[in-house]
Image (cartoon, rainbow, N blue to C red; front, side, top):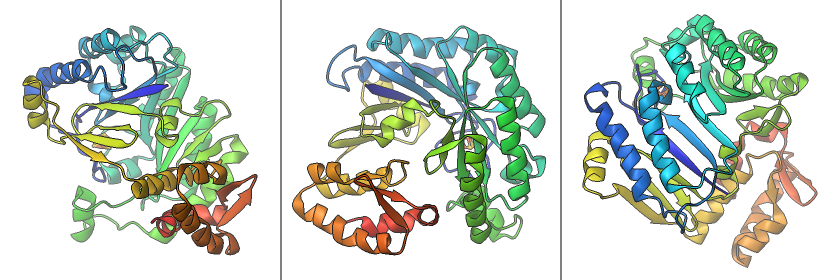
Length: 377
Ligand code: SF4
């Protein structure tokens, strides 16, 4: 069943490592943006091929969707209700930053169908948070989680970052034990990467921030993969750990070739064999939608790219690459390329072969990008 992603391109402050699409000076066009997002939902109502398509998940991401007030959220929700069948929705996620999670936010939550929060904790250590230039502190993150659980939100996911130069494994262990004690059932953990032209990149170049140490990051990743299962968290995707039964439904559609529609500036959509992406410019997005034109580019995904994307997502999953499915989906030449390339990774122990699936070993998970690139056409 299909899913919808809605991108809210507002942030209070720019985190130094971030390269997502957002603006911190949005107040003057805030109402216009909410109108445009709602309008785009009407324009895209037949994206999945029929009107009133049944959805299984809706994901509000960003940017910072927890900056939405109740009337803005309800406006977008009314547009969704008017154009899609929401009767079978299993998961409605909203990304939230701890500093926004005050009583008006929880009032909005109580009046909505949101049943899952993805809270941007990143770290409970204030030195780490200062390094990342996050708005919140460790205490407000704990408060945000406990209040959400007390308000009856059953599914809480948190984001954590490893590889931050101001801390290491002892901090990770403390943070993860705290999340487990609080009752968080899903944790997404990402390595800190220094993307080109981010504030962090410039600060490191000017020697005003400590550089990221790749070796330290790899050791932390290795430690995480050993430690998380001791608390019951299963690594069902390279960056995602969950207690059994609490895996994310929406993200699973990205990994299992289920079509999804992205609404809002910079949002991506997928419906085989096409990929679409909206313009990553807030004012141009608004102006175009106001004229009834989708500010969108389209790419026909050819068989080679389809294979590359399929490998890139499947290799990251707990179940790995299903060889039978690969042979059904891709022609003889492509399958031949896969079989001849995969051999050396099997021999070196980076991949294991179990029940007709190629699965990354622990050592292989540290080299996922290299193995993936090698399997590409
Ligand atoms: S809150 Fe999220 S989207 Fe906004 S700047 Fe920070 S990391 Fe980026």
